[in-house]
Structure formats: C-alpha cells, structure tokens
Amino acid sequence: MPDVMATKRIYGLVAEFESPDQLLSAARRTREAGYRSVDAFSPMPIEGLAEAVGFHSTRLPLVVLLAGMFGAGGGFFLQWYANVVSFPLNVGGKPFNSWPAFVPITFEFTILCAALAAAFGMLALNGLPTPYHPLFNVPRFVMATRGRFFLCIKARDKKFHVDASRQFLESLMPFGVYEAEL
Amino acid sequence: MMATDTFGARFDRTQRRAFILGIAALILAVLDGLRAPEQFFRSYLLAFVFWLGFPLGCAAFLMVHHLTGGFWGLPIRRPLEAGTRTLPLLTALALPLLLGLSRLYSWTHSDLVAADAALKFKQPYLNLPFFLIRNVIYFAVWWTLVRRLNRWSDEQDRTGDPLLAARLENMSGPGLLLYGFTVTFFSIDWIMSLEPHWFSTIFGMIFMVLQVLGALALAILVAGLLSQREPVASAVTPDRFNDLGNLVLTFVMLWAYLAFCQFLIIWAGDLIQEIPWYVTRAQGGWAIVALVMIFLSFATPFYLLLMRPIKRSVQTLATLCGALIVINFLNVYWMVVPAFEKSGPRFYLLDLLLPMGMGGIWVATFLRQLKSRPLLPLHDPRFEGALEHAD
Image 1 (tube, chains in turn red, orange):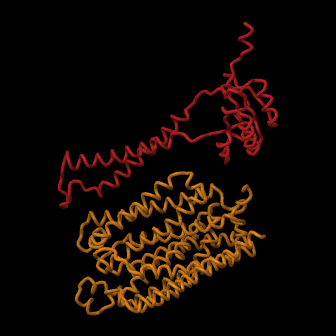
Image 2 (cartoon, one colour):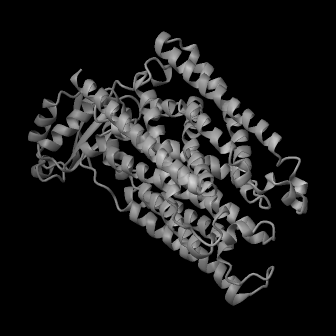
Image 3 (cartoon, chains in turn purple, orange):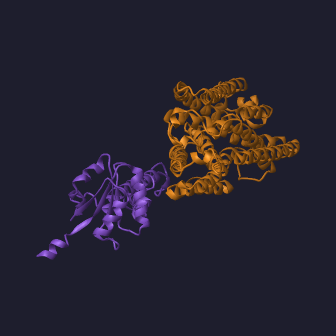
C-alpha cells in the first residue's frame, strides 16, 4: 500500500542547535514565521525562551491558591470542631473558640495543601512522568540533557508541512534537522 | 554623558529641597515643642527610632549580601552603603534625646523606682549611668561596622584587590552577630523600657526585621528610581528585581511570624506582667491601628508579592517598596506611642513635624553620600559578568 508509506505519521520536525543564543533566536523567528505548536528543549533554563515559544501561564497558580484556601479553611475547621463542638475543654479559662491558638496549625495546613497541590498539580498539568515520547525516536535527542539545544515544530501545527517546514528550519542554520516519528 | 549630567542636577535639586523642608519642619517642631516639651521628646523618640532603622538596617543587609553573594546585590549595593553613611547624622540626632530621658522613662525617677518592687529589681540594669555606657557601646559598634563596610568597599573600587571581598565576607558574620546583640539591647533600652514592667525576648528580633525591611525597601526604591538612566539601568533586570521582591516577601513573612509569635505566647501565658502591652494596643483606636497594620504590613504585601509580574516590574516593585516604608513608620508608631497614649492614638502636629524634619535632613544626607561614589560597585569579584548579558 504505497500511500500509507507516503503519509508516514510523524510527531514533528526537530532542529538541533549548538548554543542557547541560537536556540533563542531560532525560537523567536519560528514564532514570527507563524508557527504556534512549537516546543524547545534545553539542558538548562534560558531566560526568555518560554516567552519565545509562546508559553502562556498555566492554571497551576489557581490550583495552588484554591488548595491553599481549602487547607486554611479545613485546618481551622478541624480545630474549631474539635475544641468547640466535639470535645470542648476549658483551658486556662480561655474561650473554646480560641482562634489565636489555631493560627499556627491553620497556617501549616495552608502550606501543606498548597505545596502538595503545586507538586502534584505540576505533574498532572505537564503530563509527567512520560515514559514514552515521540522525540525519543530521534537518536540525537539524548543530547538535550547534555550540551545541545533543540527546537521542535509539531506536526499538529496548522502551518506544518514536512518539506516547507524542513526548509524553514534549515534556514535557521541548525546543526541538523530530524524527523520525529510517532 | 548628558544623561548623567541631568541626573546630577536632579540629585542636587532633590537634596536641596529635602534639606530646606527638613530644616523648616524642625524649626517649626522646636517652636511647637517649647510649648509642650513632654510631647516634643515623645515625638522625637518616635522619629529617631524610625530613621535610625535605615542606617542600621542597611548595614545588616549589606553584611547579609557580603555573606551570601548574588547578582541581586548589584543594583542595591550603593544605596545600602549610602544609607549606612547616614549613621553620623543619626548619632548627632540622638544627643537631644538625652535631655528628655527623665520625661520619657519612669525608671529614671528614684522615687518611682523605690515604690515599685519590679523597678527596684531591674535597677541594676535600668539606671542612667549604665544606660549611657551601653549606648556608647552600641554606637561604637555600629560606627566600626559602618566604617569598615564603606572603607573596604571604597578600596575595592579603587584598587580592585580581590582579597577585599573575602575580608568583607569575613567581617560580616561576626558583624551580624554584633548587630543582633546591639539592636536587641537598644530596643530594650529605648522602647521596651518605656513600659518597664513589660518584657518580651522576641522584641529585639521584631525590631531588627523592621529595620532590615525598611532598609531593603528603601534600597529597592532608590535602585528603581536610578534605573531610568545608566549605569544602574543595565544592572537592573527583571530577574534581579524578582529576587529582591522575594527577599521583601521573606521579610514581610518573617515580621508577621515574629510579631504573631510574640502575641501568641503572651496571649497563651496570660500573665499580668505581660498582657498590658497588648491590652493597650488592642483597645479603642489602637485596635484599629493594629488591624490596619495586619492588613497593610502583612496581608496586602504578602498577596501582592506572591505574583511574579509585580516582582519583575521595576516600577511596580519600587512603588510597593515606597508604600512599605510608610507602613513601616505606622509599625514603629504602634510599637512606641501607645506607651504614652493608653486610650488611643491622638493627633499631634509634632508626630508629623519631627519625622518629616529628620526625614528631610536624612534624605539630603543620603543623597549627598549616594552621589559621592560610583552608583555601581566597580571591582567586586562577586559581580563579575553581572553586566554582560543585559540587553
């Protein structure tokens, strides 16, 4: 079946660069050329790269805020319920609802819930752990954890075309351009 | 070159205006004070304690940076150093207070001490000669620290000797210890002993955090203002302001933590010697001040400083820091003034004139010191490469 061979399913095209500055300017030019489904890979954080590939803020801060508020409310309620409703105890003649004494635990609960939400929410939203990823099919991609910098245009991009996009990536003077098969 | 020239002119103009305003306010304050010497010294103490926080806080934060390093110190190093060099001014401003000690502190009156068991017990510490000796020691320690911090930094600019950074680092550890001890005792002597029956061991820490927070806010504000032109413009980056914003957030939280700890412990202990301090400060008008403070010096800055865009915008963070300095004054006001006004805050013109007068002269001195040296450190090995990647 010849036409199945022709439409080999690919994840996208990857260009390899030798320096962070090259990657940064390549990412900017790719955005300018109209590509939207772009991702960059680097062994270290690069200032401005996230903006260059069009990364917009996630919903993680909202998740953390809500979890923190839940923690605060829950932590306070726990103490209030125990001390006022379930098992009222006269401590030094203080009122049952002694809110100053509840503050430390309320604070701890806030931090606990917010921190757990931040850690697990981050994993949930960025899809980690990912044991398999199409980019792993590119043999050179192992270098992304060492000293090379990669830029990927995904096949799901509306503007994506195997030949045209490859030509475009070549024009950015990369070390090499590879196809990532699905 | 033109840009730096206009900057110089602006420095001079602000400096002159601040000085004239300060002197005018001080003259009015003295005239008003002749009518009410009691109130004059109370307001003077408030103003003095507030403004002394800046040179001391600046010295402490400089030492923190000498110990830790980090590029975030680059834009604020010179404002901090200029801040420490206002210590001689504050030393001079401390002298008039000596005339008012007997009006401010009940433990200076032998008849009151004789009639009070607690005061009699504290007399070996709370007596005039020892009070004066202690203060001579505090100021001597502060002068030594400030002189070394500035002299070695100046030498670093001129010679570029890399050993000076190590020397500054080595003095900063013991220096911070000395700062901690002297400021703790200073706060006991000048503020806690206004209400000599009350005591709290955490009080000095709260006081230190207020000083450092004020100094940090000032340095960020100044760096933000200077960042409109070179050379500071290329030293100020969103990343560094993000770091500085995080530091402000840390100190805001530390203040809240310590202030609440003190309250919680005293509230839980519920002892007759300890609670009056809070009973006064949580009643009538003072309760409103306290609530405003919880809202303005913790809740609001805490919430705002959690957001990255606010920390990364030079202008927004600088504005927020300006507001924090004003709130810092409210904080000192709430700590000091209820000792005199048990029933609630009352408006005295002197409470405005004296902080403004001292502030005017302080700002003029600060600006004169700031412009006397390059606005960025020149040869600190810690900042090597810090200006390379600035677009």
